[in-house]
Length: 91
Image (cartoon, rainbow, N blue to C red; front, side, top):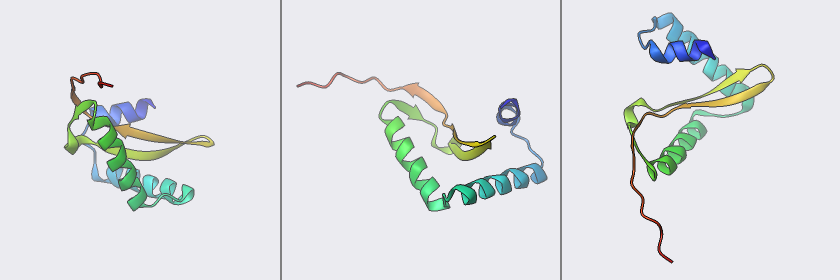
């Protein structure tokens, strides 16, 4: 987990590290049966939902599946600029 935080804070990665990370992502997605189209649809749906409440920085959105021991985790990095002001729904 700490490794992921360091990676996010230090964006200047060597190309071999980026390639290794991408390969790990592909392997994890392959093992659980998630293809690129499904991941893209998931990202689109999640950003649409979160956009109802927050101003998002679309260029910085990253989503990936990670294997942690015997379980899988969906890790999302979604930069938020600000909270949208919402008015209560009127009945």
